[in-house]
Image 1 (spheres, rainbow, N blue to C red):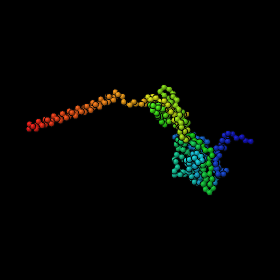
Image 2: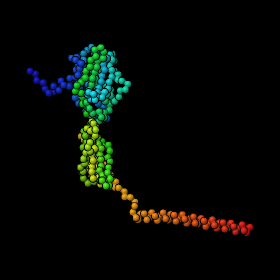
Image 3: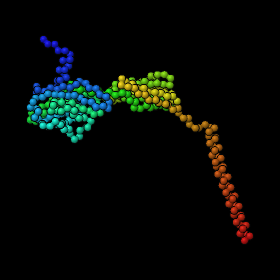
Length: 287
């Protein structure tokens, strides 16, 4: 009796696909692929099929997710006698076929990965014609996009009455660890719940620091195995309203002086006009 190793069993599982009953089909994918945010990545997928399919049109599809919630990312058609696989007119240019379906290679290339590309991908091939057959990988390929920490926002909320708190919004994969540095030592923050909705919760977090004192400087530090990023926040002290008695009296005195000077100017102009009128009358009388 032959005993299979763990690696052999795993290989058998990986190469198992969902077919249409044709024993000539097989498919091989990688269980997991890692990528760095902003860089291209290739998801390998190769297959074998009966020889008669070489003379038929092949349709290639890649989906993100499985079942009713799956998203169709890429579809192209490979016709007999050509090496190219023609995508549809509405195809997203971030995706293109890296392999040649005529050489049993359905590998997909993503030109610039983002954290939103995290997920499980499934490749499928269909043989067009009278005897329509199809084959799809069951296990899929888990794409893990990694990214160093990035501080998206650093803000302060609250009032002088209720107190102030600082919020540090961070993203990264693996999920960054957030620490706060105060004026003198390390401070302890706490996560905000809920952190995020859906799959973005795996790489997005918000940390808050309570009892923030105005007039002080605080630092948010985010780190994961890929790097570290810091941002500083200076909390301005609230400005007191200008309602002191001394200031009001000074302001009233300035307004009074301004009005008094204008009144004196008007009186002086009136006197000059009267004198000018008197001189003119005396000149007329002499004449």
